[in-house]
Image (cartoon, rainbow, N blue to C red; front, side, top):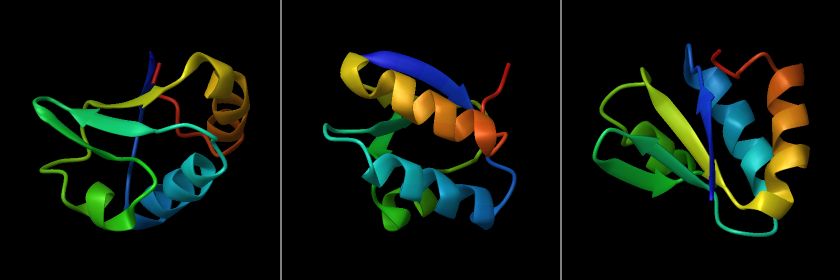
Length: 78
């Protein structure tokens, strides 16, 4: 699993992240500290305690596609 640091400023960024994640074939996880939620679920994203220091865990075969989408939406944290 590859971890990509993401930056979520508001609920619209969360919505775009979920839409990008639903295009992946395998599981997508959002990791925030000790919390791990389903990245394809809006309810899961909103259940995170904070939007700071969030990482997106994706499978290797989905990495290129999701990284390009996140870069176009300016959601990747450097």
